[in-house]
Length: 203
Image 1 (cartoon, one colour):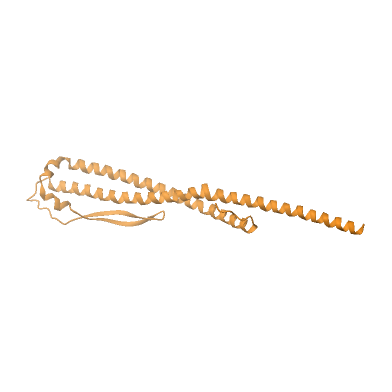
Image 2: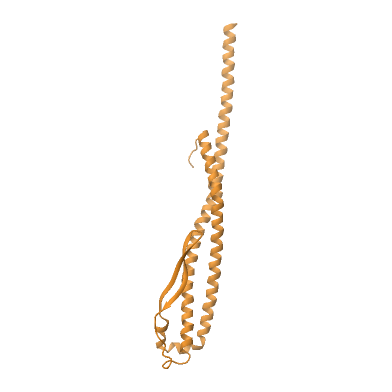
């Protein structure tokens, strides 16, 4: 730690710094709370998406064996885009899932088996859920990283910057008090010597 100057101007500087730290800390703590809340929200949404994926697989179960041998299914479930928007959450720009787009492939209802349309719908639902999960995972990653940085800053202010500045102020105040006391003592000694000289001269 750098040695501090034990002067009145340094005392003023340290007091101003302490005031700034106390002013910024509540803002950082609020941001930390918002980020914690948002991370929990995303994790809840991810669990819901995982349940939807489980349900989608359950919807496919009746046709699993049929799907393995049916090659004409792939063009109908080919993903072309995962659509996203962006939003700002507690100062962090994150992607937001919008929808998924599949390649255009008309179903020939005369040439396909009766279960085909339902199987395509179930596979598309499964693909959409996975697309949403990818976006949510990125959301969680970005928010968790910002939460980590913000938590470090809160700890820095609470455990390092504020205590250190308070200690600096205490040290400077003691030094200035000692200097003032020493000055008073020196003045009294000087006054005493001056009086002795005057007494000697007049005696």
